[in-house]
Length: 354
Image (cartoon, rainbow, N blue to C red; front, side, top):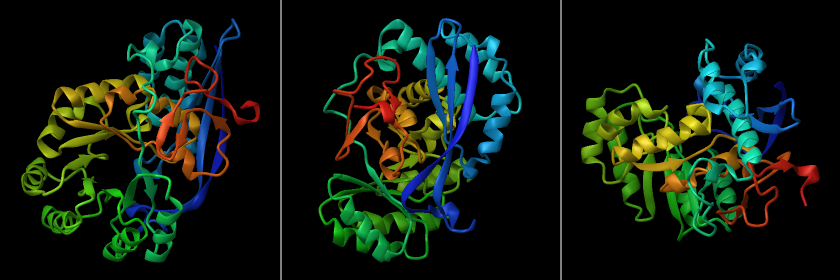
């Protein structure tokens, strides 16, 4: 097997910031990702993507270092499980890098089998017309957030990043610009303790169209504090940073009502599927989320949509230079209909897209 990788800088439509950026310089306009391509001796290929985040102490450097430690001879489209065992044996690990290789392996394996990844995994065909993603508004001034909300007019669901000093003004500005839309709030662990979190959630609950609150507190807060908040919260709580993989499902069932699975956290589609199944087994609601990503990772997440109650797969529509074409986001509705190729991840370079 030949393994090649390259860095690519995604250009954001708007300056991007979340609560954890406020102490680290205030956000970004570019997001570096890493594309991985595998080619075997038969000429079969697979594409994958890593979107490393400093929030998880990952970077282009950590991804490249991990990829450089892989023995390509131990990767095989006909043995995805064995290939993943090799990746998991490499220390120190890098979930985004494992994710990229896992996507490439499954892309090649499903293509060789003549089916899309969702069917290769036993999830059946992608359900056209059923899967709607939210559209995310990053932290900004109230005026800028109102403009972003107006630009997001085609999208029925908004995800609003909070956790800054102007949260109340920001929500009011977005609500004026989008008076009838459902809003999902993501605090990115900005509220430091259970009392502060509850005060803010009670304020948010006064808006009848706020659907739920994601990651209100830091993930290292005691389980007892999370359980206290869950019992008192007037809105459902979702864990993101709180849920890294299937091993966290039992604890999260005590702490929150639902979880957010991101492929770059779990290390790819294989463990992402396990993470969604483990959460559902604990009675948790499930969401598939994303970082700032191209259509490679967004399409990969869409192949698991059958296991999700909610989707936040908008990363590729937040950028202006997505180099790949894949699942389409039409006013929030995710569609593979009419997308070629019909197999694997169903992505291809944009310069060859029709």
